Image (tube, rainbow, N blue to C red):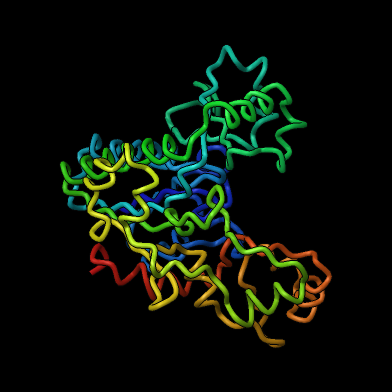
Length: 341
């Protein structure tokens, strides 16, 4: 392997690819926002790593961006057996809308930049040929999108009410996943995927963690002391696909064990992702070495200040895995995959 293409959502990149940074410029990110891609490039400087990650991206955009870069490398005459790809899948609930140039009156790029994805590099400037507006969750009522674009917000909420279904989103993701697999097999490109979190469990709502803590004390005990995650040990694959019967043929076509890494812990969790792994394997915080679970906790600066803010209800129970914990994940999980050996 000489070339590595990575793709994902905000669990792969804090900045927007080919909008805020180029595909190979991610090591310029602040250390607080280093993820697995950063640590791979840092540990393996001999590799040419292209980070196609983009915050808010759903699985279709993730697949599109990875395929775009893989095709570029193949067109440059690079042999597929010198290329590998790592995909951090988001959740299948997310949706994006393509905004062509003639729609910029309603969707000006600069105003919508915090919801944008324009992963292409064949352009003079971002949005030259259009861009994608990303909807991180089907229900956008808790975001700033309502104030940014009330008409589009209303349309998306109506779509959620009238036509949206988990099964349709699931089917589309499997179709793109299958296409990505077939492309990699055709060109002998090694492919491995992992997940933002458990993508299958019915306990999760729109892909978010099902746990809710009533107080800061409960959150500290649950997340930091007890390292709580949902128990999905008895949720087997037949139970998963029984909710999405139309897509069963697509689900069965994918070799999940070959192409995916899942976090599993005996009698506790199956089909987990980086969030569940991070909670269960977090680097402990101490007074001398403040290493929070989530990158969002870095703002508190010290362990004492972090505990104070969590007890006062200023912390979320859901966040992005911190740089220190992602380094551990990279060393203990990713670098042991076949593509690195």
